[in-house]
Length: 198
Image (cartoon, rainbow, N blue to C red; front, side, top):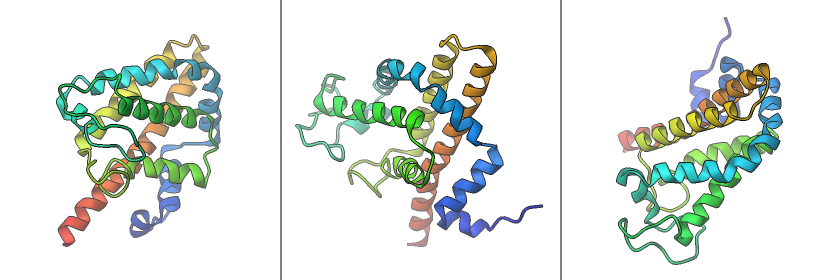
C-alpha cells in the first residue's frame, strides 16, 4: 500500500497532480491521444466555443458573470444582463480565451508550466485572481465542466476515428477534464477553509 501525505496534497501542487494522475491512470499514452486529436479538433474549436457560450447565455445564473469587467479586458464593459449579447467586445474577448484554452489542451506539453496554467484556470474564476468582481459559484463551474465534457465527447465521437482511437481519445479527455475539475474545486475549498478560519 502506497503512503500518501494528505496534508501535502493541499499545499504542494505537483504532488497533488502526481497523485491524481497516478490514481486516475492519466498516462503519457493519454497525453499522446490528446495531442493526436489536435489536427481533428482544431478546426472545430470555434464551433465548440460558440456552443459553450450559447449554453452560458441560456441561464441568468451563468450569463450574469459576463457583465462585470473581465480581467485583462480594456474595452467598454456591458451595461446590464438584458442587453448583453454574444457580439459584445467583452464576450469576444472571453471566447478568444476559451479557444486558446481548448487549443492549449491539445497542443501544449503536460509539464510544470501547463500544470500551473491549469491551476490558474481554476483560480481565476474565484476572487483570488483576475477580476475582484468575478466570483463564479462552484455549482456553475461544475455545470460548465459537465457541459464541456459532454460536448468534447460528442465532438470526438463525430470525428470518424477508428473505434480504438476514438475509445482511447474519449477516455484520455475524460481523465484530463476530471484533473482540471479538481484544479478548479481546490480553490473553492481553500476559500471555504479560509472563511471558516477567519
